[in-house]
Image (cartoon, rainbow, N blue to C red; front, side, top):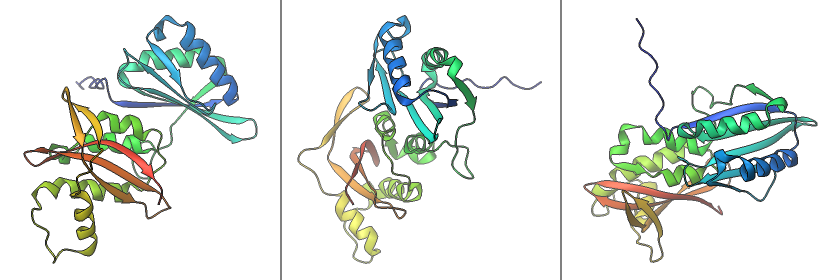
Length: 243
């Protein structure tokens, strides 16, 4: 007898994708009405300046709900709802509000991978790797990554692997590879005005950072991190900067 499937943990990322017959503007107006009137969203609010992308945050949510509208061709649109598993009921409320105009379809996945496209899903995957015992990725990183276009996952993984050994590198070794020397010199700098991350109920100053330069295009990803002790590193914030 087969075992029943293990339920997803509440903060696991989920994505729903649809063919959509509505314009971005009509979706935005519908979301404003839904969030403003539905009891399910009583403690939530809608963010986002542009019609093509909206974010619903809330006091009772496990994470933000990201709604994206993409025009594929003239008159043909695609809508995605990205949410945490624990917020599935809210995602269904959004789906029901536009039900007559939506047709569910498979989500786009990374080639040769079962992971959806997007940096947020990359960081979620990294959270579940054995490396996480030395490199902790905060949930705040995943929330911020939803809005970033960086997609050189190989380079990002290499920098995270570097952070795994960074606390144990000690004195600078001139025999190291030039790129490692540059990354080490960059990472050991203590910045006077750090980003702050809430971790295990405490505010942590992210006084160090490293840049991840994409080999695909002119994108630079900045990882803000702190040394936690016991050889661990906390990556608590992420952002893009000019190349």
